Structure formats: C-alpha cells, structure tokens
Image (cartoon, rainbow, N blue to C red):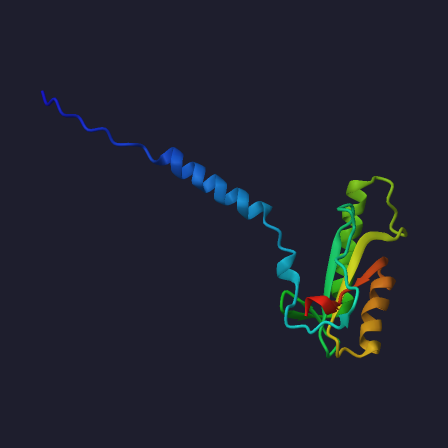
Length: 149
C-alpha cells in the first residue's frame, strides 16, 4: 500500500462561477454609450443638461451628421425605414407595459437628436418631421455645455 495519496482539487465549480459572473456582467452592461457617434461636433450652448426621463421612458438616440445622414452604430441608415422600425418596436413595448395602449397614441419614447453643429436646419427638420410622422412627440436636442470646454 502506498501511504502517500495526493489530492487534486476540482476546478469545475470555480470555472462555473467565473463563467456565470462573465455572463452576468455581459447581460447588465448598457449599450447606450455605443450608440453615440463621437465624431459629431455638437453645437455649444451655455446651459446644456443631460436628458432626464426619470427612468420611466425609453430613449431613442439619433445621430445626424453634417450631411443630414442618420448614423446608427457608425453606419448610415435610411431615415424613413429606420424610424418606422423603431416606432413599431416602441409601440410593441408600450403595449407590453400597458395593455390599453392604442396605435394612435403618442409613443412614450423620448427622441434624443444629436446633430452636428454644421447640419443644415432643413435636413435636421426632415429628421424631426419623420419622427413626428411615426408617432414620436417628445424630443431632446443635444449640445455641448460651454463650461465643459
């Protein structure tokens, strides 16, 4: 009989725990920051503040470059089809949250428009008008705070 028996530790529970932690942090990470187009040069305003919804409304972030193109996750999008799809998803979400939401009701989503300071007003107005045509009524225009410069 051999008297020396060395025990080997089982790493399976520890690896399982590490995998669960990685999965948890991947699921709770917010991807809102990834939707911001940081190449835009926002206009400077003396009293720019963050958008406050109280956590009760969802946000739709629209990046508009100086050519008037809608940019989502660094890819240009056609304005009308993209906003129709977003409006459809917002309606489904509103119906899920409140059973009495009708298709003719205003969408509870706040549209945050981040337009380049050199974007012509006519192109920016087209984006806002398309949003309104699809049921969005709450808007926030983003700018850079002068104090932050």
